[in-house]
Length: 392
Image (cartoon, rainbow, N blue to C red; front, top):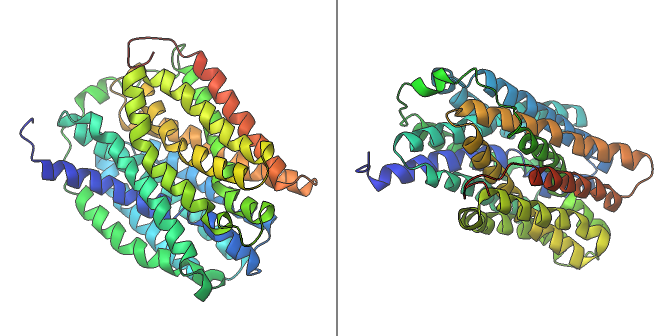
């Protein structure tokens, strides 16, 4: 196993990363920088945009739960490529969604396929890396998420002057299909041994005295990050003058920070322990969510973009690593349970924002929901038992 060619490792990471570009960068989060354009085109109102986002997150939860039921490697071999190809085709179908209802249904289906892939692709690559004693490389898969956000920023803003309405989905659609086919081809090359250890532990408890605070904290993470990651460009358009570069550039700052931060949080977790790193992560992310309220204008928007964008991926893999330490040998089942929980909490964000907007709140005030949720996450993280250097 130690003689595994480096090329195989690179291709395995590329397999997972390209899948995340398709489903999370182009399929899911491209909606965030597109939303202000869709509103200005008259295709959606802000309240309708929040509702469409909520249905996408409902789909994501359904997909994560479906992935939990399909976590066996034999089932993943069928479900993963099917979901990945479906996601790319759904992105293409959004080009023809000219009504709110049709877009809502497509975003729901997009969320379902996204949830399956976001659970199974990293889980499959992680298990393959573990099989070859290269588990520490698994965080590199999430470079696909950070890189996908950069791609979504470019595909939304660069062609914006020449496109309108549903046609704004064309750049994402053109990139999604070849990337999906590339990922499917690479993922099919990853062969897993019989998961004998996982079979022995498949009925072990996920929730116990040690892990419950971690799971409760993760509910705050899901709700806390989703409001800035859905509405930050729209908030920038409301708070700033049209000539301010952050009106079109807030999402670029978010995407850049997310990509750069992966190595930062990975290194910090290795140096001070994942638990302490996660506490720092929640503190930074919570300050970012509160920044537009504390410092309305360019300063608050920029801090929100950098701190939330630069923290939320770290929350994901630091939590995954802590959970895996507390419950060894759970494999894809553990990943699916965490992401299902994350999906359940994050779908509340746009719905709560829609309710608050209808009651007369401003979009800036809605960000208090996210800041409070992240404070909740930090408080529960304090209650995670201290252990060895990995968790302390």
